[in-house]
Length: 379
Image (cartoon, rainbow, N blue to C red; front, side, top):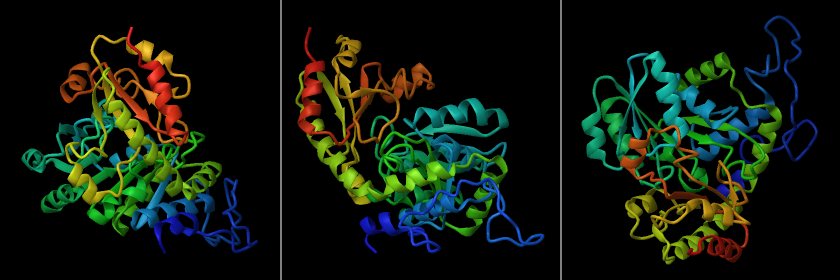
């Protein structure tokens, strides 16, 4: 089955009991058992729920993995994955990883003895140099949030296999429609499904997919034990959102290419980060492992320009956290999505105070360009 069809008919297609074309919302906390230890596959909805199961089966098929797990947020999914490790272990992370991922490592898991080290994962040699006996995993984003740094997934997974450690990929920006890390050797893929998979800014959810039975057993134990599961209703909404992923992303990317080209030619824009440009660092690697540039753009506004004036001047594009919705969303990473990262670390990697991140929506591209043009005016 081709991917576009799998989005609609993958996982559990409809309801065999009634013929309903959509998986029902099983809004129940518990299930009747006919005798002690005898049930129909479900005991308690923290452990398993038919609507959530349909979603988990769907994301596993879309990512080409062994099993999927749905959580109440992207950070809940990442936290569950980090619980696979123990005190004294170390994880190598990409050097402009999403601020929330950095925060949970630095402010929560560090308290329990799980350590991390920031590395430029776009360089396999640098990653290899930093691997020690205590390193148990490499956790990457590609493209990274917000500087769109490209990491060669196959190279990183080969390094991980060579050293007997885990390769974890946050695939939020690309989704399985554009990039499938497990096929490139990743052990675990995570998503903030709040973003492109949901696609409508109406739910918060996280997903994780693993490549084998041993990891599936361990992650399910953590999911059940800690309980950060996705509700049946949000599972239903997420399945619905996923059905239109391909058509939405096609439009997102079509618009992003036009907006990125416009920004690149603007005299008040110093730099544009966009994987669709042929001179973007890692362009060839990205094209080898993904089938499109995505629809995230970061750009640096000319020094001295009042960035608040720019944000206040926007009328169509929404200033707000998050990304991947049908509406265009814009944010200021230094004070919003990456505020938890220390100033000196932000500056060192390029998350400067005049950096803007834009999630290009599916509105009319010319309307978006006009909105930016009106907001980005000289004094």
